[in-house]
Length: 342
Image (cartoon, rainbow, N blue to C red):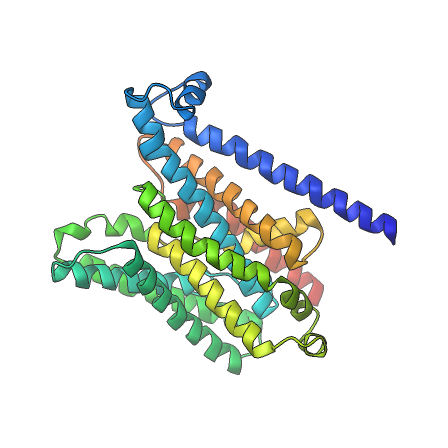
């Protein structure tokens, strides 16, 4: 038994070292990659504060680093949101995008932007987060109503996809007939993108997501008991209703914050938690939660690098790239689940 625990600890350490190494490599790669070429020596000098009057300094600190930090924070948040939803529903296929939560948040943000701009009212990050959170909660409410009547998880996923399509269709309709010239970039945002980030936005998203992550980590032990069954969790004194409400609130807040700043991003919340659990060979929340954040950060930094560079100067939507890498994982999950149930 002791030897098994030691092997587990070694695996955890190696997995975290691997994720951190990938994260550092991708951060440097993203800083160096772009239409303006720089040597690694120039990049390190700029990071150390040299060449402040150089255009490359402005490119790195005003454009690339805020975008990298946004991809890191939002990617990690989306992965953790997926893990919370998978814990809530007890199914690895659950995720913010598949269940329609991200699309509901997108719809409310689009409506809020169009309405406020139509009246000449300025928009700030907090109003977008609140709008996205409202949309996420409404969509989550529909999913919960369906789950109360439909116990089959496949049907629940289908209902979530239908909610997602409905919200996306309404969003496209609203954007198409919007008159205000200030929302010309709303269509690009609705496809998912980490562009246009600055340090003010990064500070706000870091504050909101940081609090949500801390609260999620504090729920790690009750979540671990919940994974073993409701009755077992109750015997340990876990308040099931409070835990469920907390999981709904935190997953909606995380998904809403991502959508408010970057638009809907597909498949990260499903694929990354499963890949992380496979890497760690455990589903313990205390171990998996930080790894999920790192894994989501790595995944989104890699996908953003592909989106920016493969067809440069044309930039792909981040959601398209995450779908290319994340959808095969989801398909494999569904096939594997079907084989187990057969």
